[in-house]
Image 1: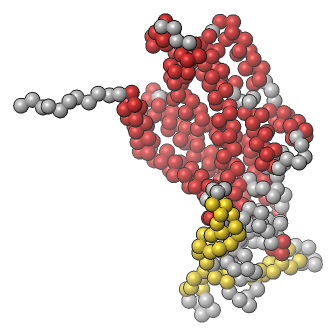
Image 2 (image 1 turned 45 degrees about the vertical axis):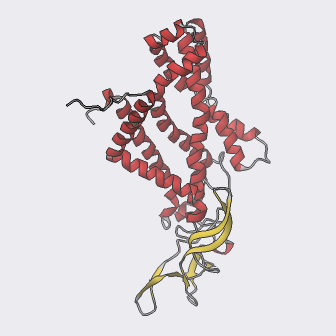
Image 3 (image 1 turned 120 degrees about the vertical axis):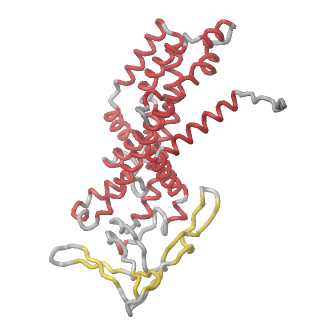
Length: 375
């Protein structure tokens, strides 16, 4: 009996879908990559819905509790029995001898921790007006899970809002630098000859620009009326325009070999314009390297933002970023021993970079089996 089922024909779209499925499935099977993907998802989800997940807004402050320690959550009533969490308001006092601030609880009334409560108004995703927060307490009590900064702002809430800038700034630079580097390198490698030589000398000249001193100069000449977000976005854009040569050199080397392939020469022989040939046939062959390089480049921009904010050239108060939160912690070194949670932004920076680098390593092994090392 002969089967009447028609043989399946693999279309280009089906091949791409199968390849994508294979890459994703192999990454998900890798325990390190799976943990990194879950970690990044949680980080970006928290940043996206920071207004909902936090009890206070980024600029909310209570000067009466500046530098307050983490709020104590009580789970036992006066009889020592378990109960729902509650907090007490705190009052600030100054020791006349040591001039140190001390905080004590005012135990005249209990303020239970409430979930899905109404608080400060905001626009969810910048569009939907809302005032719902995941948890909170009634005034005058405050729930500062990671304490307060010197202005009485909630460190826990600011971690989430700081993530919005620290996590997205890398992609801003990526979307500018990578298209320039990819197209510039592909053009140089495909054209070759004197044009290739001149283009690479120009790229090397751009690479020689000292970015650190350029940043200091930019910080000095930027208009004073700019907001800190606009200020750093402009610096990042300018930095992106000088960070593409490294990628361009690698792409150029890859294209030098790709341009000799039969399918590229065939397209050229039938009269396909060179730019079209580059975009349609040459650049896609570098996709594996570009994807890997992107996952490894994002951490560099995150570190750049953190470093600039740490030395006062990046995002400024009252806007939050992980870098300027670390700077605030360094400005009060005596508090680090008693409040170690002040270095939480540094841990998140480390964790984020570790996740991106782990994904990049696994992607490299998946897309280039020669480097898998038996994985």
